[in-house]
Image (cartoon, rainbow, N blue to C red; front, top):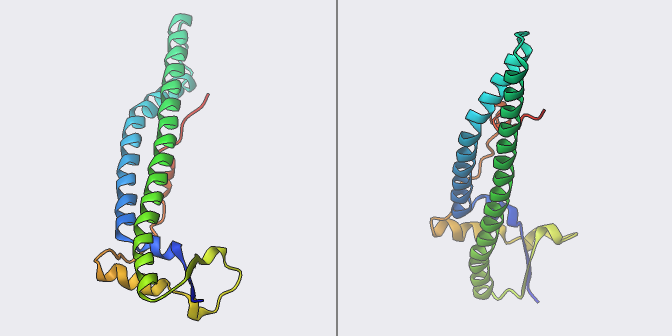
Length: 167
């Protein structure tokens, strides 16, 4: 019986279609950030005005509180939509990526008379000679579906862009 293991994480990170999908998801994220920006700015104005010490008449103060509450609700709805959409897009991308890579892996296994291929994460021990990850990476390269994976750090600005202000 011929057995091989694969590091599916390495294959995924270097798979062009997956990286393209990640870029597309980043574009969706930016759309949500763009929607949230004006709301966040208006909420900050209301907070700053309330901290300024300027005394508003009770009616104006009530209107400001009401406006802030409405903005907060809108921001929470955008945040919930964002989380749901991101989860859906990531799940879809992961499934599509798995299905597409499985075709390459299956073809390679059949061409090389491999009986079983398992993911490296599930294996407690495997001799290095059983690792077929690089063979599949070469197939991706041959099909122009390989990209060199590089880690892109998240900046503080990106982290702060999607903070929902709560009362």
